[in-house]
Structures are given as structure tokens and as C-alpha cells.
Length: 67
Image (cartoon, rainbow, N blue to C red; front, side):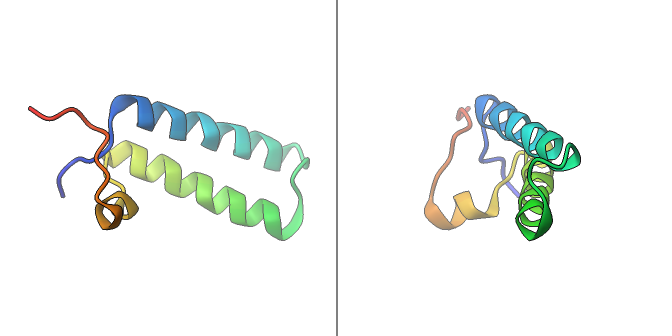
């Protein structure tokens, strides 16, 4: 797996995941929508940690700096 996510992209994803988790656990986003968004936030964190997004590969997007 080659990295295809830049630092800014990773920080934004972790920030969004934190907001979604906060909204879910404070019961502002309840029910099925909350669970779906919480799952999406877990995916955001995982892809940020490994700096690889499979969707970016399919779309041909690369936000990391090339060497």
C-alpha cells in the first residue's frame, strides 16, 4: 500500500471524526444515523493512521507530497 493521503487531509479527517464522536456520545445525533456516522468516523481515523484511502485509489486522487 502506497500512501495517498497528505498531512492536512489526515488532520481534517481526525477532526471530523472527533466532532462526530462527540455529537454521538452527547446524544445529539441519536439512532441509526448516529451509528452510521460513528462507523464512518472510525473509518476516517483508521485511514488517517495508515495514510491510505482505498476510495482515493479508485478515484485516482493523491493528496500526499511526492518525493
